Amino acid sequence: MTTFSIFLILIVIVSFLLVVVIMVQNPKGGGLSSSFGGGGTQQLGGVKKTTDFLDKSTWALATLLLALILLSNVDLMDATTNQDPTVDTNDVQQIDTPVTPDPTTDDTPQD
Image (tube, rainbow, N blue to C red; front, side):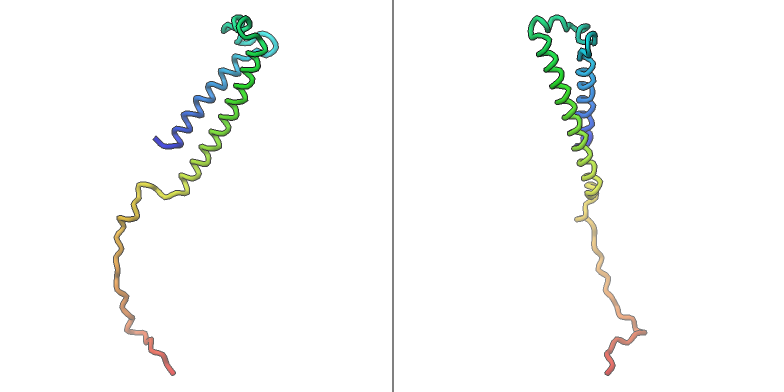
């Protein structure tokens, strides 16, 4: 598994979590947070703490997503500039062919 594949899997997971956190938020009444037990969190932590947690997690996931995308781009660019790792340059044989002078030319210096 390549590094780019790992980044791709992480990007998909973080994107899914970001969508879930955004959908759970309560935008001026309603929203999915009340459908998934938002009333129970009011008794335990209060509405303000739940909103703060969702807001902070949204920003954290968005920042993480941006960082993963940039890092995967850097990794992709490094992979294209490097040599193909399947080619081993140590196995290349050099053939030394002797150079014979052309008999039609005279290379002697003339005074």
